[in-house]
Length: 409
Image 1 (cartoon, rainbow, N blue to C red):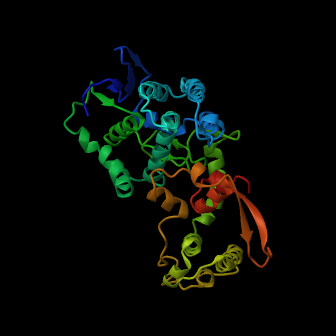
Image 2: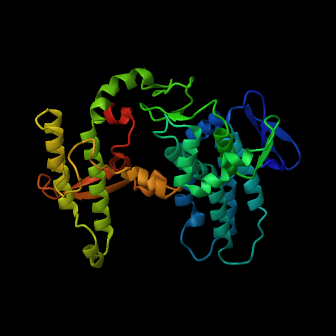
Image 3: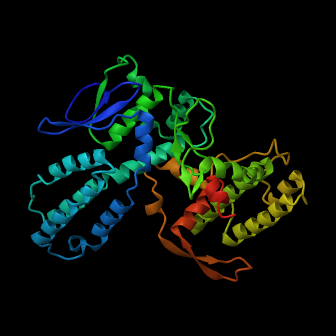
């Protein structure tokens, strides 16, 4: 990890800070402002690529080069390249490292020689767009790594955070194992990386190799931040919707106190289990149903409505915790109705999706809009338009920020 080469260099400065050096092919270098690994990683996770992503999607869907036709004019590729090469300029200020990497990769791509095949022009255009997607793709990986490594881990050590990462994404953990830095001098270090992901994994290794700073997640806004002290810190210093997270977080914590009730936690986890069972049953082939616990939409809706009404009774103190759990456990999932002994599922649907797929991207995995048929008795078979955000919220239920849970209450 200490070999100096062309491309991206990471040079150690003072006070645990590192400067990214953009090393150009002609030997010139550009030094970016120094930051700690934790600061650099949070910046990478929070970079807003929405405008850039929208422009890439437009090229994929609207440009004539990708329309179905037997013969692609060379002029179509030339026009496409001329427009595509303008996109990296959108990142020049907000993501200078991504801008540099795109410049190097695009230069290499444009040197590709025509192989004489009928599909060469189409493949050349597709390759350029995949290169342009590199910063977005890398941020998706990094966000999922953060989701699995730092969410709910505020009171754990750096080693425990790394072990959580290893358990979920072992291949990633091997590439950012802090043990790779053992024996490397603690000052004046210079490392090299060949792409964005390599740079971020290097910064992750450097982050895990120290304990002066820790990355945690704000319980109110769900943004990541670096606490100023070693004391457990629940909220960041951001101002969201005109209010400091600390102020709003403390206010909504009263609601969270009720949600943290053990019986309600069991209810949430049971709901996730029922929904996962419903999805498995719905997506299975008819001949596979005999091997699954039956759970069609009507059964799931019936269970959800029963649980909703029981929850309201419980919150009004009309049911004891034991009575509440007995009432919602219609399929006999729990071995005990004592809240301290009730068995809980460990993850929500959302967390399972992220853990199972490093490339999981809500924008591409959920449709923009979809129509769902509500077969519940009260809806009488009506169709409901569900947005991408609605689908995300459904899968994320039980795993949300205080702002999303109670911000509109």
